[in-house]
Length: 421
Image 1 (cartoon, rainbow, N blue to C red):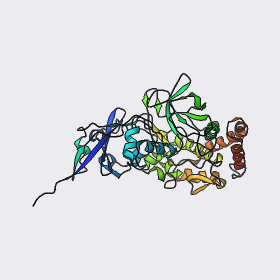
Image 2: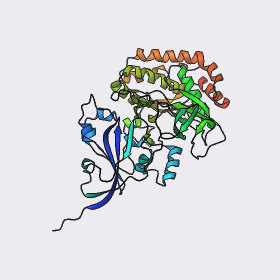
Image 3: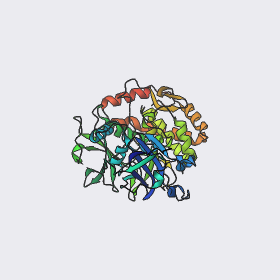
Image 4: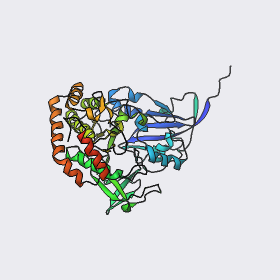
């Protein structure tokens, strides 16, 4: 009886590195399968010295021993590093690929992903056997990685670009330096988004929310801006990257990655209690992170921000091993842009509506995750006092569009007595 010849399939591969250590290989087969296999040497390292890729490997001790197989898309822990929205559309048009074909996107953006992971092409003939073993019936014909380049990858809906600041100008490119920023250009859909986000972030900062350095800049100070469609507005929003520092890249992970969900599931499949529970259990400063999270949740209620989804909550691995809540980002007053919007992106104490939120809901939230309520309450009351004392005057001075300010003031008047400004 003759033995059937194995099916021949071409395969290209990307090596994933974290802090100069190979942690795994992603193989992409011509049939559309993507397989992430972790490097056995990385998996065998003692936990106390092994740089962490994802919090999941701490929750699931068998995680690094499994191969993660997906069709077209990459595993969520990697897929969430890729851009969404307008930037993704621009990239897939440039590559002439389907939006769900994520391996070419990773190959194109792998040198400047969020956090510290680097994806680099594996030359022909150098894919290790352990990275090919999951396709027993396939004869893998290795080829060079196509679509490899050095570009930028920043998740989000607006057009965002990674830049280096030098001599008062911002240079868009792939070079990583100690002074790295994200630039968000004006939206072609909504008016004055940079001014809105800058103002919302300043209001958040005023009541104790930790934020990176931010600025509003003129488009004229941007060098190498790609040929993209822009409105007539000239102001862009700049925010310093908290995943870049003087010593290089700092690893980060958003909660869509942590919960192993794709970006399209960033609303609804999890809630703020589950985010808080993970922080309280695994963070290097669990109580401090919960106190900061409480301030941010209150801020989102006060600012009518309905977009604080899973991808807008991130942990940072400053010591390469232990997670801690990263500074806040993407805080926007969304009500001016989403007519009739009424609540938060995720459930808080089984509620979303801004107008029913009160101190008791936060008390329930804290008790369910096992945090001492007095330690949370004091931060909420402090934030409320600061908001009532400073926000009315500060809002007048900020560059948010006047129509947006009026909407926000009406929103304040409609909140529960606990939170009304």
